Length: 121
Image (cartoon, rainbow, N blue to C red; front, side):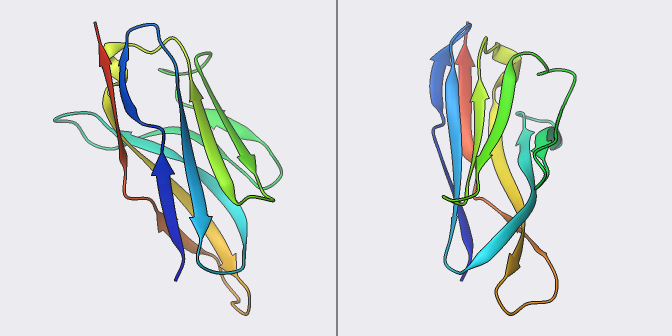
């Protein structure tokens, strides 16, 4: 069974950096679109960054210039490098990926369990 496992969250001071990872495992598949959402305390989920299989990327205005999304297709892993972190970046971060499993005819969206990022002043 396919699962996405995130890691790299934690507590960091304002101005610091974190690198989140999201590893897909459990089957043989091709990763298409993938990205990161976050859910700040008391707020709804918001898209942080996304990437396509062609390598194109997109970022939310609130993180543009501070965050870089990347992927290693050979390792089936998605990354989110976050620099210049601010207290307002505090949230639970979730990765997602559209995966085409071997033998399937359609992509299925999978989600990670979430990893907490807390930025202190």
